[in-house]
Image (cartoon, helix red, strand yellow):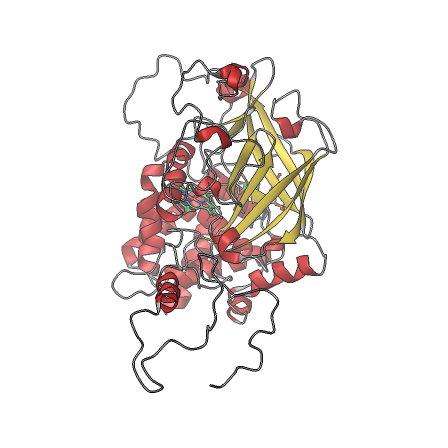
Amino acid sequence: MSKCPFSGASSTPLTASNGAPVANDNQSRTAGARGPVTFDNHYLFEKLAHFNRERIPERVVHARGSAAYGTFTLTKSLADYTIADFLQTPSQQTDIFLRFSTVGGGQDSSDYARDPRGFAVKFYTKQGNWDMVGNNTPVFFLRDGIKFPDFIHSQKKNPRTNLPDPQAIYEFWANNPQSLHQSTILMSDRGIPLSYRFVNGYSSHTLSFWNKDGERFWVKWHFKTNQGIKTLTNEQAATMPAFGAQQDLVESIDKEDFPSWTVNVQIMTEEEGRNYKINPFDLTKVWPHSDFPLIEVGQLELNRNVDNYFAETEQAAFAPSNLVPGIGASPDRMLQARLLAYQDAHRYRVGANYNQVPVNAPRCPVNNYQRDGAFAGLNPALAGAGANFYPNNRAQEGEPAEVPAVAEPPMPLEQDAWLDIYDNRDDDNFSQAGDLYRIMNEDQKCQLVSNIADGLSQASQDVQEAMFAQYDQADEDYGKRVRQAVAARIS
Ligand code: NDP
Ligand code: HEM
């Protein structure tokens, strides 16, 4: 019998999944030297069967991503605005996990797509995990979640050809002028970041804070990259390796060149929200800095790579519904759709106990009456012997009980609101797209128009005409230049 030169060299015994040492992982048992593999090769079967189950469904959006651990350091107390435990005392530190992503491509697509970049941060606070599941853009394409599946279908590959489909992309936008602000950002010079270290992150949504007096404030979060914004043109991006942003993140952290972001908030009182000229809960709009200046509150640093991409980055389950006392949602209707969608996605993709996977597990005690399910390996300590129902008479014995002190104050609604379907499709889709166009320099305008023309010139004439009309409404010069650029591509 031949012996592998290295067999037995390791001091760590190789085992099957039941822990039993494995004598030979190079050859199957066979009936004779040239004979078939026999039915008693249970270790071989275990190995093949586990291999068949190595993949879980990829995320339906944001499938390609890179992540790292780090630290959030508070530099300004937010105690006047929120009871959130991790926002009280300057120099307080909170562990975080940040996953960057592209949106439309599959797991093995390029890091250099012209696409928003996901910017999802999990804050492991002492009162539970707060997830800020944002993007590198301050706005989004839509203001109602009911449109999200249609939008994503139109931006992904054509279902018949499996090829990019500029007609579908622009046909959706032509029918949804509310996308113009975000599509202007996407087609701008910022549409393809050099790598993840060079993007800003935004909550995009309006969230809320509440303080110890029960006062509520509306809040937007802005994470400004300390590395500066760096971007690529389409031509430069085409020369980059598909995995370039992943590599850049891993290598910069490995060599202790830790990327960091300055964390800011914009804050609006309820009263200001009621009277503001812009609907503060419309995700297609920013709050202009001149009205609501950025308030610097902290620093976020990434300083530790993951050890296991699948276990950590792939199984990470971020959810806008992961809120903590002092941080709440808002009437933003996109946000409400997301409060439901993500937990559902995680149950499908990772399983009912996705919050027991270490990367998702809170770093504070978890006590509740949820029980069992697949892979319920970390049921709370009392879960077996203790009560599995609530209310019960066992608070003295350490059974979990409600904490009324963290109740969220009532959220104001419009007075005498009627439940109905309200058409908000034409709620000023153009002013802020025009504002952005007008702050661009000549080179940025040229890049924007050229990037639009690349795709729009491949769309049908009716779609082109509808888009020209939208650019005209944002800014006359914007419309004129896009018309010219598309005409030049077609001629
Ligand atoms: P300001 O002049 O105060 O701010 C302009 C902002 O635009 C800066 O934050 C700048 O980011 C950012 N910016 C510049 N070029 C681009 C680009 N190609 N894509 C995305 N952002 C860009 O103006 P206002 O606050 O009045 O906003 C004007 C427009 O700026 C808005 O319509 C919006 O499109 C854009 N913007 C506004 C933000 C806000 O929260 N008010 C946030 C981001 C963009 P930086 O400082 O990183 O260079
Ligand atoms: C991922 C749905 C809007 C940012 C996802 C996933 C779903 C989803 C199902 C995959 C989750 C998973 O399997 O782990 C939706 C719906 C939306 C919406 C229904 C609109 C109603 C947005 C918006 C933003 C955003 C507006 C940013 C402001 C992200 C990010 C991820 C993600 C960053 C990746 C999280 C990660 O890194 O794991 N979204 N989304 N989404 N979404 Fe959304």
